[in-house]
Structure formats: C-alpha cells, structure tokens
Length: 442
Image 1 (cartoon, rainbow, N blue to C red):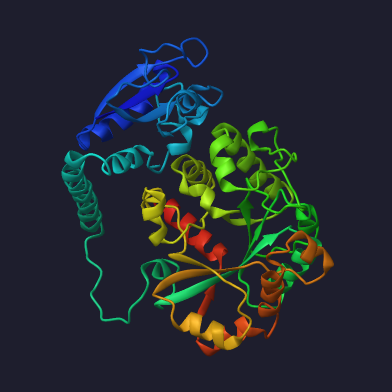
Image 2 (tube, rainbow, N blue to C red):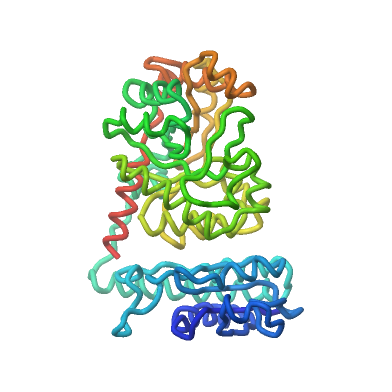
C-alpha cells in the first residue's frame, strides 16, 4: 500500500516533502512526481495524473493557486485527494517560510490520509499508535521546555469540574450553550425574527446565508450583532431558490440555482469552484460590514466528505474563525476524524450541536438543557415569522420555523428554560476571541 504525491513544479517540493516525511513516520510507502496538468495529464505511468498503480490508495496533490494538478486525479481516478497549495504556500524569494505559515504551525492534511488508510491496512493499525506516541513525546518535551523556562509549575488545586474549552474561554463552569439563530437572509420574515432573537431574546449568535435572497436586506439592518457566515452549496427548497455568487457551472442544477441535494453536490461539484464560491460568500459578508464571528455550512452533511471538509477548515484556519462541526458520534459515519483535524489546526468549535425540533414548551427546553453533557453545546434554531410566504417557500418546515420564532422571543420558552436551569449562554464572538488570543501567544 502506498500514497501518490504529485506537484506542479519542483518549487513545491519543500512543502510536499513534509507529507512524505509524515508518511515515513507512519510507515506508509510513497512515490513523488512532478506533473503538469496541461501537458502530461494523460501519461498513464505518472501518478497521480494518470491511473494510479494498484498499490496507491490515496493521493496528495499540490500546485500553485492557478494550477489544475489537484483536480486531475479526481477526474481520472476513484481515489480521494487532499491538499491544494496556493501561491502563499510557497517559500518566499529568500527561501524563508511561506507567508501564511510564519509565526504558527498549520497542520497539513497528510495526517488525514494516514488515518483513513488504517481502516483497510492492519499493519498501519499497529504502526499508528507508535507514531502517535512519538508525537505525544514531542508535545511533552515542548511542555517541559516551557515549564523550565517559566521556572515553576502551576499550583495544584481542588476545583469543581470545568469544561476544558470553557476554561479557555474564562468560565469556571462545566456546561454552557451557544444559542444560534440560523438562516439570516432567508427572507424578510427570517431577518425580523433573527434580529429580534438577538436583540431582545436569548439568541447569542446568528448565521447568515450570503447567497440567500434577503441577505442584502439583513446587511442593511445589521447593528453589530454576533453574526457568522453559513456557507452554502445547496438550495433545497422546490420553489424558493438561490445560487452561487461566482461563475461556477458545477454548482448549478437545471433551475440555475444551487443543487437541492448534498449527493448532487458531492457528485458534480468542482472543488476549486467550491473554494472560490465559499471565499466569495465570506468576503461579501465582510464587504457588507459584518464582523464575521464564525463559519457554519448550510446542509452540514456536505462536509462529511474529506475534500469538502478540507476546503471548509482551510478557510476557517486562514481567517482564524471558529466553526460549527457535527457531533463526534457522526465521525464514524463520515469515516475520518474531522474534530481531531480541527483541533490539530487550532480551530475551535462547540463540543456538540443540537438541531432543535419544533418544541415550544418551556418544560421541554428545561428537560433538554438539564440533560446536556459537560462542555459547550450549540443549540441551532431557524426562526421565521409565520405568514403565507413562509408556508409557500418551506411547506415541510414552516411550523418548526415559526415555532422557533416564538421560542426565541423575549421572555419566551427558551429564555425561561435557560433561566430555570441556570445555563450559561456564550457567543461565537467569545469563542473567536479566545481562538485568536491563543494563536497570538504561539
């Protein structure tokens, strides 16, 4: 079993060599080639541009920002691919480190390749713990060096249970919640419900669908609230449609909007177009004046494919934004450790996400909050004021959405439940501040 490593130029070799070194540390064989997506993509003997050898089980492809090398293996093989270098990934003219990596380490995706290979190679299953022990030893050594420099250890103390992430946020508590009102921009009625929940209700954060029809209206009414961007590749409603901001033919369905299903996106989307589109949505929100607090994904199942998760994590890593991720129990279904990869990239996220149903009674919310495990939980609601437009646009979910608007009202069911259970509400903006503070200290 081996991994094929390809690059567009020998100038990329210092970066791609890191992948080879990591594979060596895990006992995985590899082969490395310089390719040209434009001049040698049909050469059958040159992995990964042509058909891979029988032993190749994964591909790591990298090239400059305008190159097509990473896209070629996706077109001519069945194998997954990782890593896309940009001009910023290259060493500078004086041989210094790439510009976006100065001052901090940005864990590459090579670890993901090794972890997925362990699912089908018994030898790697035995070698992987050894590699992890070596990494743990390096971490312990760095910690010992730091403590020696400080000249002391922190004093031991007996304290109540505290979530590790919440402690990093400065809270001495075991559990807390982010109450997030999703799909700002969906409609005028959605904008009114979301802003009411933020300004007078219990919502602590909201997520904007920049591609949605009323996103510009949401920007006009923005007053500095905690709002993140809900990156979109889907428009699931039959009669209510939206589409990409960029020229992205692979992200269109027959109606001229985003595809309705995640499976359609997985099957047809070009990953370079995905990256450009998601970046355009984020930049549009910033241009409109939003102080973006976090990233989420509309139809989060999209990121259960490693290639799409990689694009998502790269954007969050670059802008130092926390993200929403599915709960850890979904990792088995996804087949790769997306939460561990986010942690390695020092990208913060809530420990779990609870997508609320149409509960409207305070007693139901009290039961939910009282039963939450320790850590930071995100509660996701999609409030929209009831009316004929909502019922026509979302015939299957209008009752739930209008129920969320009632629950998030000032003095509503959720506000009463938070007070009754003494649950600490926090915001994504607080998570972002902690994340950026930690990165500055590196």
